[in-house]
Length: 428
Ligand SMILES: *Cc1c(COP(=O)(O)O)cnc(C)c1O
Image (cartoon, rainbow, N blue to C red):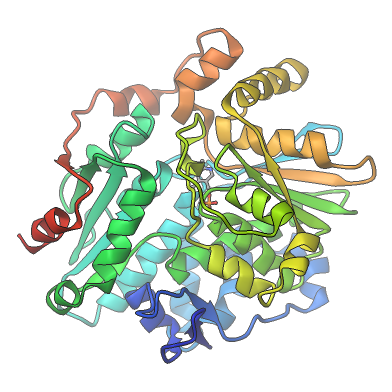
């Protein structure tokens, strides 16, 4: 299978090339030439497959020409080596807990798969690869952990200073070795733009072997469709299924639509957002109008111009009406998020993080009585402990992993949002 650019101005590439190039030079995003449909038998018999086996089944049509089957088996077993439990929260509402990986957020899934693909592609090269990644919170940690100590790979993580949680920052800044954290005086969109600019800079690309680990990379995006199947597998009542997806860059939600296009029976999705609500507004006003980023308690979704917007449109063949059929918008502010964390806990004894809480509340507000809803719980609440404690008006005990991480010293390089400064740093 080949991957084309959504702007269609450059030649399609193999999976391997698309992973290594990350971002097409015409500023589009790579997208599969064909979306395979799964046999209905596979969907009916999902219960017979483990999570890595589902991963293999979903990913092999995409990777076939670039990764031999036995190697892909090895990669999915290593990458998807933790549980994704579906927990019942209340009547007809379930939480898909995507936070049981090493950095306690769903981004481990894509980042671990990408890291292993790149390590495999790099086996036959002797050139060092530099991975650039912008993070609004969780990506950086997942990528850092996925690539930590991998030979021949250097990782540079850009994050907005003061706009990620303390625990997230520690996950980025305490590893050392081949991982460098760059703290930018700006927003996540600034960080994301600097990474994009680096990829479009000929001089940089001629000198360094650059690759991106953001969800714009096809190897991070594709595996995010797997857990929608995993959720379906664990669900008892599969009638009129609604997935509520806490969204920022829309990698997660667009991967859900990809799963749907591959044959997963879903009634519709919800784009659950904080005040950075460009997609919910787009669905109602029919105008795509990014505004200034607003910092919120659900910081991993503080994105004003989602990088996966082109993929979202490509999935519906550019038809807004089709997007409106399959996605409903939802947005709440910080005060409502805090109230939701509290009410969900009071009613169900279930603690949500500020992102998952928005997904949960979207189901409460939008779901009809005959529907079944799953919200994606995208991170462990401990990553946002001060927010959750504030919402619940009490202190919570921290798991050991938190205190251990918090005691490690932070190491970062501070920089303004200037691309020039960043570029000269990369050349050092
Ligand atoms: C990244 C992230 C999101 C947003 O996911 P997108 O794929 O960027 O829409 C939501 N919640 C958490 C905890 C995240 O880390």
